[in-house]
Image (cartoon, helix red, strand yellow):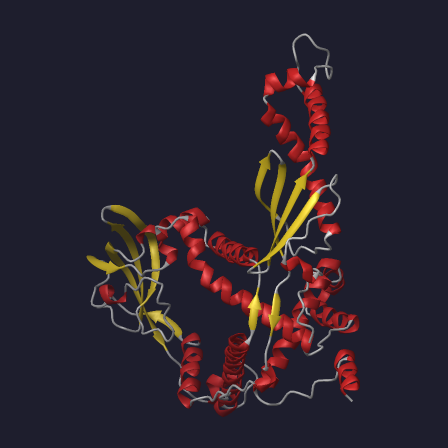
Length: 471
């Protein structure tokens, strides 16, 4: 593998490299840590003077100067009216980008992203830029990494658990009289709730509350069961209830609410027996055993997907541990931006703005960004290591393979297949699909390496040449 920096810089960049022409722009570079390059551009006085003269003409045309026709005011008048700083700002705006591009070409620099202006001094005119360079990843002996994999199994209790869900779904709802309310019943209630006197909830005209022990209760939901059990139809009752510490409750999360409940109606579930008849009502199953076999298969498939995903993360983390990864700080900020955007979208789906969410957390935007930084750094390192592994393992995805994936995806849309195919075949969508396929193939190879099942790595032209030279 060629471990040279990927930015195309000459080795002389380790030291400042001034331009030898005294009357031209003087450019020096200095390689800094974290894949950043300091670029200094010093503009000769004669060029500065010419640029100031041109700036004065532009400003004279832009501003109305008493006693002069548009664009005809002399430079001295413009300087007195606007100040010399205004002329320099005009020069910096006009000259800065031009000189920056020329310096990149002159020094053979390939930025990985936009440069940042560190400083500008006026006498002499000197621009100091900080340029992000491409990340450098050295994987080390990644092919020796081994990570144990434990295949998931299905416990019979899990099958019975899922079967109970099915039985609950097939229950017949019937009136349950006037009470008292018991576990397993369904209550229809009116609810009003406050938190420290502030309105929190008001649900009238019969809200349905399940009083039976839920198989998979969402811990983020309010559970009124304990307060309702024992009530008679028509009875009103007031009780306190802890509000879950969940973002969905905003400023009320984690607090205690005061609730008034009126029981309007009680119903009960009449559950079917666990027999072949139950199996026949939920699908193409002749027997209960056939239904159980299908449930077992689905649970195993789900557990395998989860186990494989977690295993893949562990494998990449092991690769990261032995790798040397250098990258510019800007990449971390971009990853944080992506995480913030994900949070903003999630909040929007829940009817909340990002500002409201941060207010509920009692955090500023900057505090939240700093909280996300460790996660962003982990995600960035994983991605860079995986991308380097894809390169070193010579993994590719052909155009034909992308087209085949698009056809399979489009076919899922039935009558809209043609429209879906057209949408997926756009340049941007096709590129995204290609990257996703590359990433999946890279992860599959990483897993194969960690299990000791990877194919031998094909020799590259470079390694073949090195072997021939050694011979």
